[in-house]
Length: 171
Length: 326
Image (cartoon, rainbow over all chains, first blue to last red; front, top):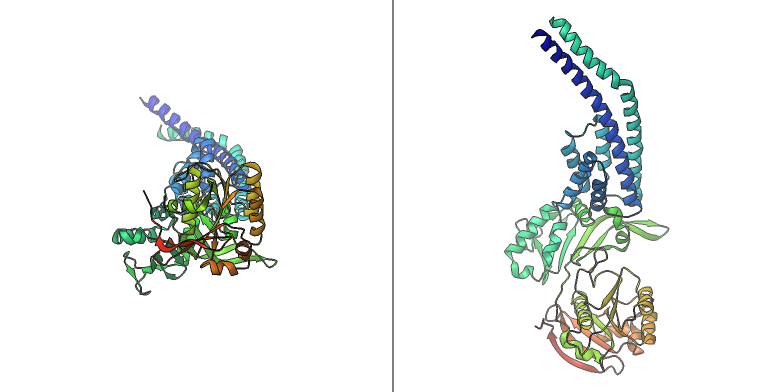
């Protein structure tokens, strides 16, 4: 009985460690997917001259399901005709996705910043805002990837070690 | 018709106007304009100018009226532009935009100027939402005067603002194009420089301009007329308001091509028409064959008369209001 319990604690520790390392991986993937979306947005705004609802609708269909959801939610809010401005619709969409996307505080702050000038400036400024956000996202993705490279294994081992430690303490 | 503009207003003003609509359904049916000015009361044109209270009542007392804030005007413009002001650069330079349904919105405010010329509007403080009217059949009774041996003549509709010239023009185009009330339909080429006649939104006409009409929207009139004459083989060229410097040349080209013309001009009557610098030659040289004069005497769409542009003789006089005939 005791042995089974010990195995369970060890497995749980390992799984927790593994989950944390997975989150790191996910954040990198999400940031890369966001970079892709913003590159599309730059094209849709700069060259295709599409309004935001149409541009983001297209992006939501092409993007990964998770980031796609953010853009789909934004498109839906713009099309609802409830009188929301783009900045408000963006902020609400971010808030709605906050629990589901494995991003961190800095990533969210960056996305929130982007919303402030959304839809209320001329093309040049709009493109500038998109490009700036893109640069920041790239930087963020690099840092996230480096952090992941450094800490992914550490998290897994920590999980296992933590499990083992609890067993030792309890025995 | 007018309800279609409400979703483009911010919710607070939308609610007030919805109440107004319920409270005064008859006046609402005659709504011509909704005017938003920063830090001024909400105004509507329904026969005459009224102010609107927050409860949707009409009033003349500015203190009772619903105040439109600068923020409301800006947000409304954002909503009208699909929340994407960057797609409105052309519109912000021209000072107006078109909503689905063909309603035109005029804009004014602070301008961005470079090298002495207007680049675009920077901060918009005034909006004039003009309700487009589609009154099918109001032009039918005029058709016999505008034809000779089944050939459409060169006609100009002359009227002061808000007397229904664009509405009449639109219906005449539809009649010619569909052959409604005519022995045979006519191929029409429409140059809608300001997007007001067909009310095109993203290139698609929102108002009925007939089934044989080729529409060129947003195109300068002169270039558009040349293009249509060359490429589409129209029997009748229709354009929105003339009066600019290149317009005389354009009409001479139409004369050369031997096709009909249907257009509008800003003037009070034939006398006023004959003294406008840019229009005078049309009248004195008899370049237009028919002049239809409208006024607001009996309300928008009052027909004052039809003149022969060459003999200057009235073909029809006797004031009456144009009605929809079924």
